Amino acid sequence: MDHGERAEELFRQGYNCAQSVLMAFGDVTGLENDTAVKLSSSFGGGLGRMREVCGAVSGASMVLGLVKGYSDPDDLEAKKKHYHLVQEFARRFKEQNGSIICRELLSGVNAQEGRDPEARTAEYYQKRPCPMLCRQAAQIVDELLSL
Image (cartoon, rainbow, N blue to C red):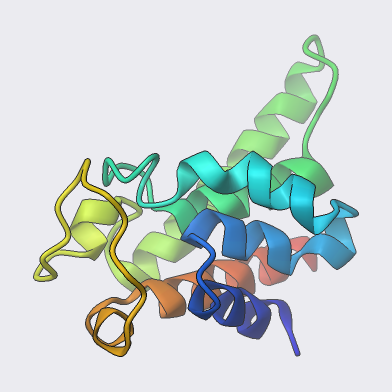
């Protein structure tokens, strides 16, 4: 199973979008599932269900940071290179989906911000693009990590 398939499967198991993408890359990041789940738990639903930046995008950014990020705050070249990588991820994600903003990706779905999470029913999965977005985010990360 590749990272995209794994991310989609994890979302369908009930993990949020950010958790699903970050956990799918455990073999690459070395993060234990419990750490990955907790670290990314706040980013689901576009940051705490506020419908801002898509959680799949946030999860992908965490993977990119763990694998290709910088640690020296004075290394401006490394910082620039990393930001360009994240910007390229966002460009590719937008190209495929039209946005990186949760509320825009869910337009047409009755998905209000700031409410309690919905039950994960068959209807929930039918009306939302989230499983596919998790898959796509992970696939784009794989493409970028292979460059």
